[in-house]
Image (tube, rainbow, N blue to C red; front, side, top):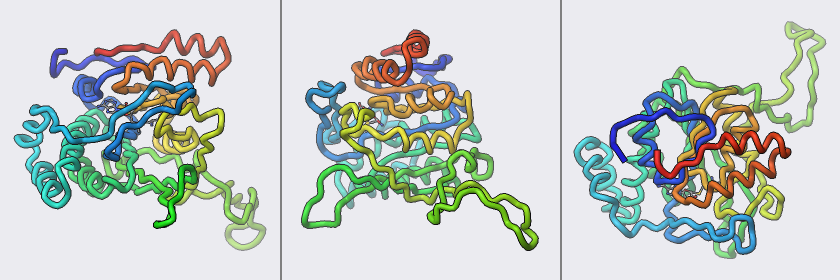
Length: 318
Ligand SMILES: C[S@@+](CC[C@H](N)C(=O)[O-])C[C@H]1O[C@@H](n2cnc3c(N)ncnc32)[C@H](O)[C@@H]1O
């Protein structure tokens, strides 16, 4: 592949490739919203559930091996602040953590570049690396562009007897600009705890004014994902569509371009399509294309899915 040559991306693109090779070729200021759910540095390989629609799919999340020299050189030569930070991590933690963070750094730098000036990025992680990823994001996106640390509180998975059950992930939301960004609070209202429905004041200076139908959600989101539900197709670390629905509704508008550079089973792009956004998904595994098109077939009736599927552009190279 040629380097430094941007190409025009169409809507409904699934790239089965290393995302860094695709990102480098996307023009700057192109994407409205990025959601990424990368490996978390769990030091294991994740396998899909046997007998499920995803059977046979897996991804590796261990970082014993040093990255390609090129990535190190980029950070060493061009990003002294990141390099200093990663040397510090290597000293206090281990080189698996710093290998992982070098890998993330070069991708986050590209993601910052391709994001539109009023765009947002949501980085999904857990407490294995969240504290270090937050610092990386502060360096690359700027501390003043940090918007929220969202806690996704779930219930699935096992519970041990030696700790409080670990049942949350962390999602960092950054905008590219601290003032100019999309937040469609009206589209994501949730009911008041009191179960109040729409009502209006009868007395005082607010008399006659209708109260909002709900409240803006807090930054702790309890979203239960039933892993036995139809929606769960057995993909390891698959996320629920309701989680992505809130993110995409809040931080993008119809026709906007959504990019998921670690798209796995395609949760974000299924939701993007449903909400009439344009989308680009990238994943290392060439098998996700079939998995995702299958999800589209199940999601839409025959005619609609036919036209969407015919439009989906598959590539393992730009
Ligand atoms: C945590 S999973 C994403 C799950 C997804 N959010 C879902 O709901 O199904 C991480 C994904 O990143 C992919 N991946 C890992 N390294 C990658 C890379 N360098 N480029 C593209 N995809 C990568 C893996 O194949 C895996 O599918």
